[in-house]
Length: 168
Image (cartoon, helix red, strand yellow):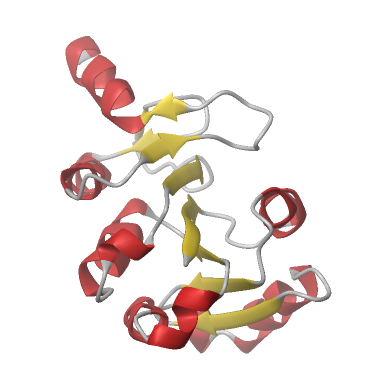
């Protein structure tokens, strides 16, 4: 089962690799990003960030969805990490059973390469493309929140978007 699908523009790093994997009792981490699979140096850095004893897979978004749609994936506790909201929406669209995803989470998005994005929360900056992706994810009915680490309080994405749109 996919315990969490996380959007984090840093992909795999200490918070994700150690804090979340321990909190969720993860057996495997799948990093799903189309550009990463073409960059051997970045893939090596991601491999070094993975905790010992946890299986790591680096795939394109579509390949990750296809592999995690296989029946054997249901017996594992898996964390999937994507770089941006559009990748998360595409992953959900391509997985055979979206209900196999227990939770969608955004930890960090849009702050590094801001490019005119507006603040949704302190951790999440969005543009119109991101908003469409967030709305697509919300339409699935999956639990969807913003939370950097387990000790932070959760912000419901639907509530954050409603406040964002009201503020204009």
